[in-house]
Length: 316
Length: 319
Image (cartoon, rainbow over the protein chains, first blue to last red):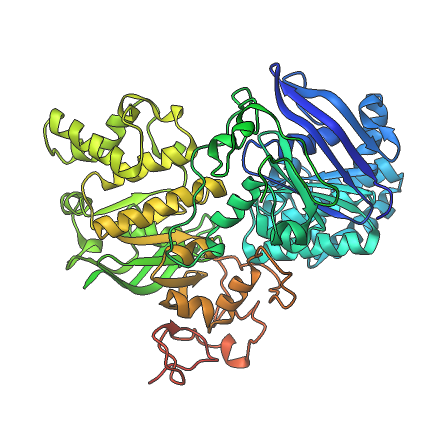
């Protein structure tokens, strides 16, 4: 594997004096697609936002650790430099494109703005480039699409347009937060194929945040599973899904309907995810774990292992 | 025995431009007592409209809704109120469906109050019974919906739907907003209740793996019409309609990379301007000339020993 493009080191994020994310270490190499997976409230989305320094401070902010991008700690950069990096170097796409596209400007105008700003293209050249980008993300009749407003497009087209905008400056890292969760399954496949093709073609790295284990399994090289604000397991996707070590990952994979005979009782995970501030002192999963041992309740397990890491005192 | 029978049920909405959208077109299907029928399709296919129309939350444009021998499409408001005892609904969003100002006990007892059933004391006893049935804590009735998690709120909605001991529940994306670990708790609850109470369920979802898990039979909708319907195993393991095949193939599975997944181009067309003939022909990898002509009829294919029905010219219907 080549040198990482991004290394998240000992990241801690806090809100209202409570740690929301702790001890997160994760790196991404050029051209790699890494999945960050977990259920609501596990801390995956705030981890993603912190990379772009987009957390809603002061309510929530990074309180420890380093975000090394291409040799520089993003946390130490002045906001001006960070602004240049956002878009130019690191781009982000979200679940609902309607919230990040501006409803009063046409798609073409929004793309041209970013192209003129970051790449200093003329108006004419920016429009040509915008059309080419729309064509590349698979929007039919791209020239006509430039003059459309976001509400005139379908959900899938808007998501493509947002990807086109994100790609406008040729980012080296794309952070994609649930990019296909709001889309139909046939359109989801198209969008994920598109991202997969782009990273293979351009060497763009992708950090894919999702709750969907199937998506991660089909598209990611590596996967990190989060629970209760920490990464509890990390491995090559193939390894992790074939032989999970952490008891949470194991239980999660066992409980999905597709892993069970139709109609059979699902091996459910009892209880709920503990909210930040109410996490137990030991492993956050201990109260729900059927393999819990005494030590799990009192002592936080370390993230152990080389290629296949797990934070578990009693792993599978 | 057949409990619910839809006979060429249609729902057309007027558009602002003076046109119309056929959200549901001539859907005919049956649900037997105690049966779970899964209704699956992508956004805009009409599955939710179908659910709401058969409940008369939306007025049907034409067709019949036979429930326990009575045509609901022609029922008076008074008759409908009586029918609601036997026909209930659970929606996706437990936040929107539960009145935040009422205690959980009141929320669950509401159908009993509306129907004028029981005394205060007997209703309280019934609420306690229902809480136990759906796995809510004994203290739940005196608390408020916002104090509960999404999964618990869905249990509250289910308890309320069960209050009148209905014969059938329409569940519209009832587990779609839940995390995987909570979703399986609710799916287990649904199969438990089904086994104990002999409930019939119309289970509407966009998620085929969930549908496969809970359903006896599956109906697949595309742009307002049922394109394939049959026993769950037959539809999932040997789908005939190219749309069903693509839908199943598009689900990303945990495990080995699926190399030969069917890729559909484009998206579901605008229901206000559906393509002529088979509405799927614009995306169908196997479209033929005939598909652009008339709408293919839904029926049992002549050439196979199948129990289900399909609407596709690749599989001509037995005459």
